[in-house]
Amino acid sequence: MRRLFVNADDFGLTEGISRGIAAAMASGVVGGTTAMICPVGAPERIGRYGREFAGRIGLHLQLTGGTPPCLTPRAVPSLVGADGSFPRKKIDVTDVSPDEVRREWRAQLARFRETGLEPSHLDSHHHIHKRPEVFPVFLELARELGVPARALSADMRRAMDAAGVPHADDCLTRFYGEDLSEANLLSLVDEAFAAQGGAGVLEVMAHPGYDDAALRAISTYAAGRAQELRVLTSPELARQLAARGIAVVGPSQAVRFPGHLNAGKSPRLSATS
Image (cartoon, rainbow, N blue to C red):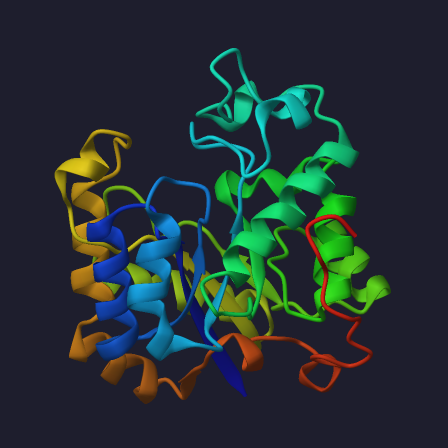
């Protein structure tokens, strides 16, 4: 059996992105989304567009993006620059304190819960959870919440297996940039499933959205998001996936070990626990 989970990153970042992701989830192959809670106005956008997709909205944990943290800059000095905000780019994240990451990410979780939603899965902005000093905190949070998490390498998958954290067999991150077409996405998906022996669970990272002025002010990837939205809502793409026997699923089914989901789930985390 082949299962495909398309996740839309960056829910909540701008009005256009939030509205576009909602459209992709309502009438396309996007099975879930992960929300950024730190940008100004994000909680309101997440609550307004996300309620009808409860159970399919995860948390897109931040240490980058140029936005202020949820905690005060004084509380997390290793995570912020002189302006009190996260660095814009991953390369500028240096010498972070794992304890500060832990406290900040739990504060992001608490703010996300204020929207009335519970995270269905976890990943991170700019894949910052790949960093060796950050990954243990990410793994700890995923394990305590009992939700699936994004694995980006064989080492990460082994660590998640050992911790009992559900994940997909692989995560495709190459549907991004210039060649944004149905044909290219199908080719990438075919290649990924072939590498898995023709079966399994594949996650696809995507960034659909409507191009708006707020997005162009903070990102060089704007027009591409609108093209991704067109592809991911294409009826032909859905038909081609079905013809290949690929089931499009949400986060609860996008795991190697579905039976592990929520097994031994720990109590709710607080911002300070």
